[in-house]
Length: 353
Image (cartoon, rainbow, N blue to C red):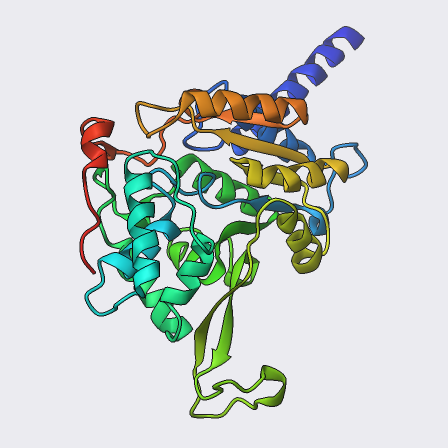
């Protein structure tokens, strides 16, 4: 009789485990994915109070990088770089300074043809801050929104606003459904990212959980008056004033977590050396980090050599890597595919604004 009871107990426990795994299955991830399996394990344990895997609600924090982690960065380059090119080179309503135009022309040539990046007098982010100076935040976000409707270079069936990795969108939703506060921590400018996620991720990641590089802001009527001495008026608007204040990459991502979140995340997701610092910080505080590998050359413009090098760096830090080729059931969703060869793609140009 005791043996029968024990057998039934074990059977029930097995069924409970299978149910838990079914409830935490992540759409868009292939069966056998090590990352999906680990996330499923974590989610099946965090509610079991009194067990080692239990995590109280206030400690369920997940931080995601944006470009290359949630959103594509190979169309043929980062969204914010393309935004700079569009504004400086292809926008008939704006005339960039000669020095800026020359640099951005060289940048476009290099990034569209996989050449070495040019050396400019300023960073790409500073150039971007300058070409949008004078716009209100709302006008800038509208500019981003307009570019989101442009078809992606090198792909069929997708606009820039649709360039999200579908398995990662599912992962964000799954974590949010299990009580996680989910943040984006990007090297891209934060208002740009806030606009990009509107209608896709903002139901799980509100605007105040989007952390990114910062451009200086001012009141429209402020002029050269220091902000500490200027009072905002009813006639004013908040404008971009033309300077990069902070680029959130590497150690700056750790600083941003400390300052803007206030506690270490349980989970960190990234895809590049710029994300390793926050991954190590999470691990240092008992969390776990996952880094995506750009190893898919059939459904995306991956780079296997780069992926292998990054994988070794991650392994040296004890960080788990995620093969997009092997672990993603889809990348951008049904009906999206590469257009022609990489060489043909590189000859395309951004459409005029």
